[in-house]
Structures are given as C-alpha cells and as structure tokens.
Image (tube, rainbow, N blue to C red):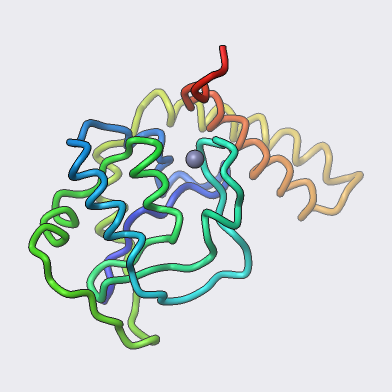
Length: 183
Ligand SMILES: [Zn+2]
C-alpha cells in the first residue's frame, strides 16, 4: 500500500482534498531543497491522460507540472509536488520528512500496488483553513445556481467544467499571493 501525498482539490465540489494555499508554512531552506530534490527523483508509477496545473496559477507551463505519479515504494505523489515545495513554500507531513531524512533507498513498487489517500486526507484535514472552506462553499453555491440555469442551454459537461473547474481557479487566485514583480 502506497501512501499518497500532495494531491489537491480538483473542482469546487471537492472538499475532501486541500488546496496547497492551505499548506504554506515555514521550513528551513536546506530541508526544503532536500525534499524537492527527493520528490523530483522518484520512480514513475503511473501516468494520467492530461497534465497537472499549478494551483497558484504562477504561469508555469502545464508540461512542467507533469502527468505522472512518482513513488519511492512507500509514498506516492504527483510529479508537480516539488514545484509547490520549492516555489510556493508548502509543508509536508513530518512522517514523510522523517522517511526522506532516514535515507532509505527508493524502490519501484509493483504496478498493481494500491494507493491510499487516507493518511493525506486526515493529515491535511487538521490544517485546513476555515476562511478558505467558507469561500469554497460560497463559490460552490454560486456555481450550482449557475449550472442549473445554464444546463438548459449547453451540454451539462461543458457547463460543469466551466463552473466547477473555472470557478475553482478563480477562487484559488484569490488565495494566492501576487506573483513577484507585479503590483
Ligand atoms: Zn506554481
């Protein structure tokens, strides 16, 4: 069983997974770099149909966020996770940090090994921001109103993608610091 870390909210109806904005925290720069390097060097485990996207909308190309899940045989994470650690100052569970610092050699798990997100959900649940969750529910309510009105005119899948995915991107932008260099 592989323990998932670094999986993020994907649309406005998803309140089980956190946004990386909620996990920004302090960590010594040398440890941050060590974790990011470790995450970058993981084995490829499985690939998705599309690229991931930076939840901070910082302008990094989708292709650089990757489309793979990487693993060390104990943990599994999306290929874009080191970007959040290095560029956006997120913190990760101390259990994972201890594993990295212990220096065990990564191993390639069997392709059929199962993934559990239970640990990640429980760990991130204690760190969620009530301010973010409140804004999420408000945005979700507006999206649902818009969906029920617009689905008479357009295919439901199109309406939902626009409202739930587009709406999440708008919401996350409100919680992201302005990029360096802008006013
Ligand atoms: Zn970014």
